[in-house]
Amino acid sequence: MLKDVTLGQYFPGDTIVHRLDPRTKLFCVVLYIVEIFTANTVCGVLLSIATLVMAVLLSKTTLRQLMKGMKPLLFIIILTGLLNLFYTTGDTLVKIWFLTITRQGVYKSLQMVSRIIMLICGSFLLTLTTSPLSITDGLERLLNPLKKVGLPVHELSMMMSIALRFIPTLMEETDKIMSAQKARGADFETGSIFRRARALLPVLVPLFVSAFRRADELATAMECRCYHGGEGRTRMKELSMHTRDALCLLLFAALLGAVITLRVLGI
Image (cartoon, rainbow, N blue to C red; front, side, top):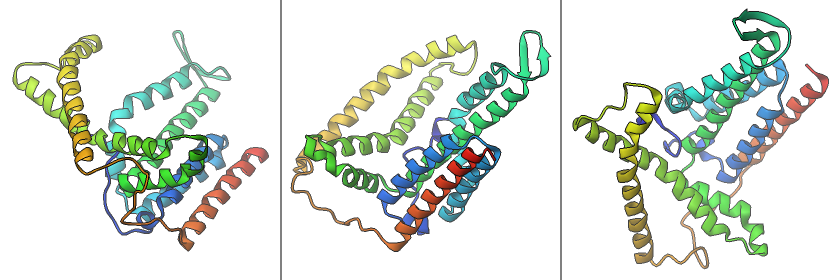
């Protein structure tokens, strides 16, 4: 399952989504998240789903890539759905012992599950179609005005990019450690949930040691390359906005406006 984590992985491509400026994609993700949590009607949710489907088709991202990233979060999605299903008051549909399923609970459960899935897929699309370096440059350019108040924008952007980049690396390292311990007789898949949690404790020590070692190697490599932060730094590829970026931003802003209108009208 750890190999199924796709957050932080980048798959190169030549689609219109890949060619968008990273600042545009960051803005669009923010607008889409607002759209998701603004939609509280059937038409609004359907419009949000259509927006995601459109982005997936344009990026030529396969459904398998998105579903692989969904597997580690499946427990959270199911738990959220069940909590909203059984603990929302309203018109009773089914009563099983002390558990009551209401019409409002079914609607709320479907709404929350769809929101989480759309949020995860939208975030995955950003990392699948944008390289970590581009995300760093985009964040830095967007946060540039905050330099005037003394915020270390470049350093913060670099840390976020490195953290995102090392998610797949740490997942791969964890999988190797678990495989090595399984070969020595460790059992991670049987017993109660508490027993399996205790079995994972021996994995944490070598994982932290490996993470600190990688961090030290990365710091040494950056120092050897005379890295001194963003001051005086040049870029091989300068970011530039094109007509397609403006059209994309206008489209997402229009979709958000449409969802807000549907919410006001209650459609």
